[in-house]
Length: 140
Image (tube, rainbow, N blue to C red; front, side, top):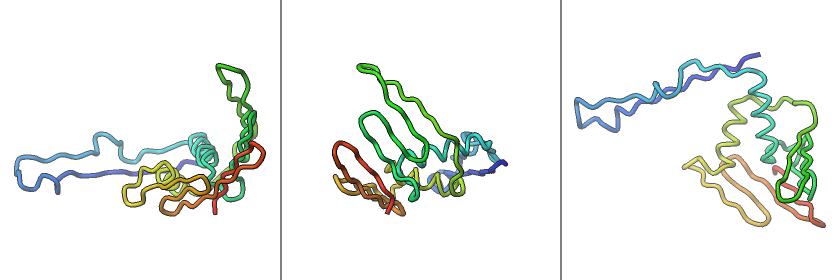
């Protein structure tokens, strides 16, 4: 399964006053870019790792993180992070990209706010709780 994305942007409106100036961003992002299923699976892992999957909250203890898959943390000084668990599908790639973009605070129209108990940005609303050294991030 392939998911196709097409991105194109023009700077023409920004340079209307200078007739000879014209630029396009299309050279920086190839039109009709296709991502593979393996890349969609990686995006789903990133989406889940940020606690965006309402069915699989991010739970982080001192030696493990779970969010569907499990990441085991080991070592001292230098930490090794080892992922186990099969890839799982998520929503459409565009939905996951939008969620991640907003959750990372990259959407200028929807600034991210974070406190000890909540993370919010646009369509993303998460609760944060801690109990006995284990932190849980749950999408509301």
